[in-house]
Length: 149
Image (cartoon, rainbow, N blue to C red; front, side, top):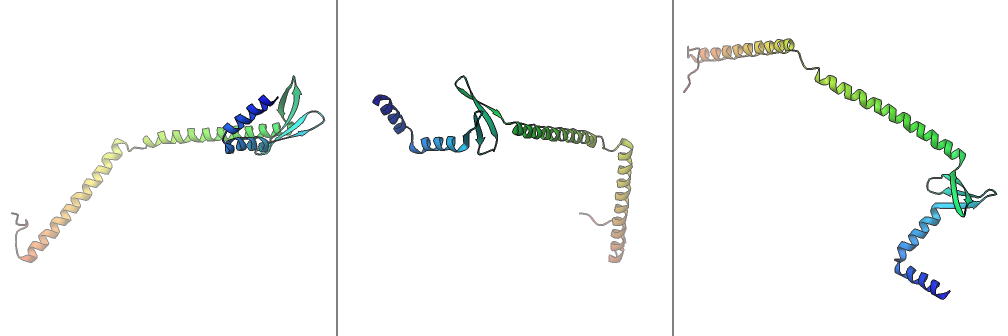
């Protein structure tokens, strides 16, 4: 009898003090077992999930309580609906991204825009040439083109 107790004590000394205490504290604080007429009620203190446990063939078998199961199923259905909505939204966004590439201008629209830009720059150059001629006449140069070196 002393040999198993001494061996267990020796093993406990080998385990770091904080680690063994933490593992034991987590195990005892997370679940609470309460004896009932038909077995045990196990409650997860972190999540609040309750399970009904019964002893069968020397083992404790736990099943989620009926009201918890209903809440679980409801939550699963809600998550399925959200997933379906998100998948539909992603699909719509992907389709609209494909439409964005088809919004490029047609060849006629491109030519029309290029023609407008060409007219703009020609008029702009004409205005600049007119201003240069006016400046040269004011300076008395008489020549329409400036002197270049």
